[in-house]
Image (cartoon, rainbow over all chains, first blue to last red; front, side, top):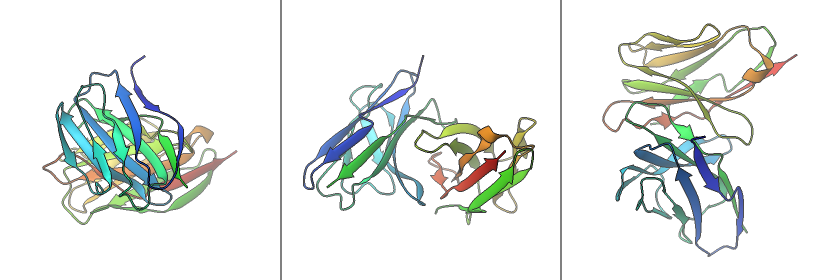
Length: 112
Length: 110
């Protein structure tokens, strides 16, 4: 079945360490997105990519980095520069502009 | 700018109806609606585009009022499975990427 796979489901890291969250899709979607979800805040856009080897900053890109070397993959790195990294991270994809998003099941990152 | 959803929370009994509103300070081009159950991924419900007024199925539908810069989600004869947090995402033209509201929590009791 087609879908988006995020791994791991739970991730613990020490403060000051970089960590990379995986996102893979087999839907053949061109566009991929990373969102951060905090309680009561809704979904906030970190980065998005509409084509391989190209990506744009979202509303809260500071302290994060991404790459899009393959259509299927859009990993997110949470760097030590991110001041409050503990959150629920969701990856999504869409086939084209103005179509619904398919979300992965998320990665809950806890930094201690 | 983040759209405003109201109410923040709704508690219903099975079979009752609910309306969730989503308002933007900007002119709208498209509105997305999603439902998220606790600890799970948001699930796409529908998207409404400028020029279209109503969409959906018999029990879950939505309207798009361009003049009021608002969309409303209608849940009719609610079922236990409707429980979750509903998010709207609004887009005002250009990037085609929605900005999401803070969500409305819906709880349906037997």
